[in-house]
Amino acid sequence: MNGPLSIPVDRLAMLMPMHLLVDADGLILSSGPTLRKLIGRVRTIDAALELRRAPTASRLMPTLAEAARSGQRLFLGLRDSGLPPLRGEATLLPHDTVLINLGFGIGVIEAVSAFALTDADFAANELAIEMMYLHKSNQAIRAELARHSQQLEQAREAAEMQAFSDPLTGLLNRRGIELAFSLAIEARQSRDRRQEFAVLQVDLDWFKEVNDRHGHAAGDAVLRHVAQMLQQETRAEDSVARIGGDEFLVLLPDMSSETALHLIGRRIIAAIQQPVRHEDHYCRVSASIGGALSEQYDQISSERILSDADEALYAAKRAGRGCLKLFGQHG
Image (cartoon, rainbow, N blue to C red; front, side, top):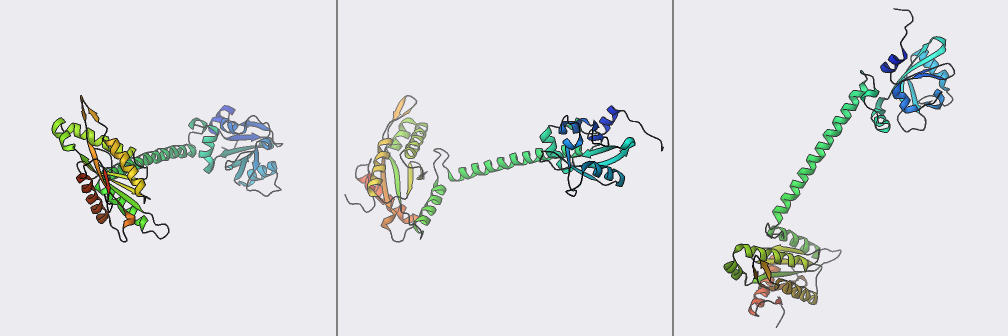
């Protein structure tokens, strides 16, 4: 069929929601509903669009007419917008009118976000719709992968916590305190800044009597209370561990003062001596503490300093319990 073809304006808008029909002077005669959302109620094409990828001296309407005659693709940018250029083709119609059909190209996702577009703003066969659904699907997949990755990370952190923590008290276990010791010894051997540390070995007095008299639930309550007191009376950078039934260990980095260590020990002993209420009775224990300072050693290992702290602990037991003794300290 070679004769003229007439298309009602409403059908043109449905088939080409991004069309623009302009006369020879650039006056907008018709525009698609989607394009109108982008350009607003402007009356001329110059007020809405500008040439992109064209020589600087190019004029809009002559360039549109030439593109319509030659079949060249057009690149038009929205004025005062950072969106990628719209792309499309132009066709010459009677009376020197020009019909331009535009599309978003790679800028469709940005345009959808910037102008709140939906699939109703696109022609039924428009590939942009597929891109929108693909983009949304990708977003959903990325969100699900991120959520799954976060769950895996949380599970990994929980597993690490379980591996290095005492389940009853939440303190470090032997593996956890061994790691803390390796870091402390590494810091002491540093050439940049040698950092001394101290160790306190804490053993509960009369704990067996609590278990025998009130039961293991009462004993567990006492252990949790002791753990809380140890954390309360030490610094945030200190490491506190439960290494046996009623045995605890405190590693204090950057500690070289016997006076400060005695002060911390006295606070710990006073806090642990406070009675613990369990159900309808009170449980009482005390703490004997043995300590050692890393500055006493030329060559140091965790085994040696722990052995010496243990020896000081037994000296505290022999001295009547409920006190602190430091290794190498007389009296």
